[in-house]
Amino acid sequence: MEKGHQSFSILFWLNRHRRKNDKPAIYLRLTVGTKRVELSTYRHVHANLWNQQNQCVKGNSDEAQTINQQLAVMKADLHRHYSHLLSLNKPITAEILKNAYLGIGVQQRTLCEAFELHNRRFAEKVKAGKKAPATLEKYEAAQGKVKAFLKHRYHVSDKLLNDVKLAFAADFEHFLTTAQGIGTNAAMKYVRILKQVIKMAVEHGWLGANPLTGFKCTYEDPQRERLTMEEIMTLYKKELIPRLAEVRDVYLFCCFTGYAYRDVLTLSPANIVTGIDGEKWIIKDRVKTNTAERVPLLPIPLEIIERYKEHLYCVYHKRLLPVNSNQRYNGYLKEVATVCGIRKHLTTHTARHTFATTVTLENDVPMETVSQMLGHKSIRTTQIYAKITQRKISNNMRKLRDRLFGEGGALQQQIG
Image (cartoon, rainbow, N blue to C red; front, side, top):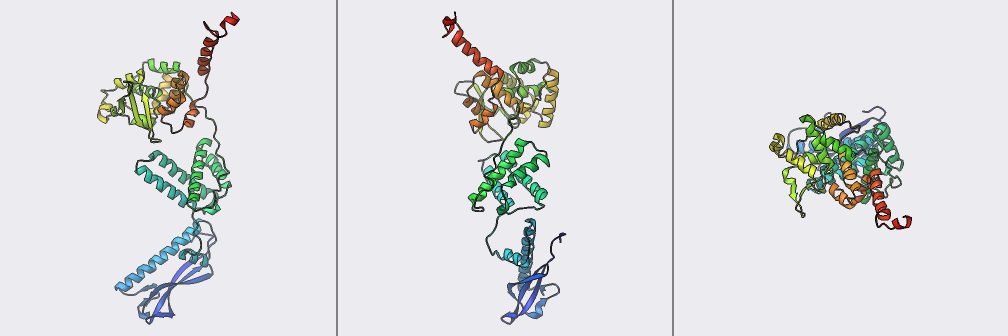
């Protein structure tokens, strides 16, 4: 018994005033604290076959085994209901426990039940190939964060959905950013998943209304590092030892294709196809979103692919490039940056951002095209990369200068 909770006990006994075919009825006495209630088990047995000390039917007959098994199940169910009420930190009386066991009253669903249903249904979609496994991992991580918050804030393992109020979202976000040291944007993503689960609970009739609707998820605008074209070419031209050269080449490949680490890791020669333009393309579904990335190959990534066609790792594993483990890859990239004199944190994320900005958007590739190549489901995701840079401003103003003031320009003769 946990400290601070009332005593709880179950006793089976023969009620000789209730009989059937001259057999007394087996009753259950449920005691919580000083209060008790009684329940019929709807089983009957001859008095001389009842063992009161062990609270079971004597003998090994089929009848004895059946009744004893039913009593054990009944006892286990009552313990389960008691533990569930404890986890919700609700007051428990013998009557409340009896009603919970009998299913009397409206069944109240819990937050963890909602998460379990949400994630189970999503897992079924992943199994059917309709959703990405990486997204399921995020949902499961969010469920773990919510459980940790419940234990930290309320000292319970679960919470009734009806007890979730608007402040729950703000308190959850505060817990993530302080007690767990998670960044603001990452914390908001967990809150967004929480809101999504609560919304599903409302749709299933488990809640009358979504209590978290009034909480707006806000995100900080992160400073996304990217390489300039000059830095890209510094990497490309630098003579490096083989270990670092391989990592540099994989990084440059990502800079010119926009592929993330998990996607470039599994690229194979089968992913290269001839496009409608007669040029080589790479087509692959993103691991993160399960959406297709279709990228025409520019000369540098084509050269890199050709360089590793006979590489032992690539031949043996049927891979396009020799990609290290994520930890080793990022570690070697630090060395590459140091050797090349680049004072930026090189990761596959910076490579992807470099592709979106320096390689494509700054060279007037339409955002819709960039969105398709990055495998984004929504162009709003692509707009994150579309910050106006000095190079983009310079390119646009040079074109404007030529149009207005160049030879034959609209304003050239007027100022001539």
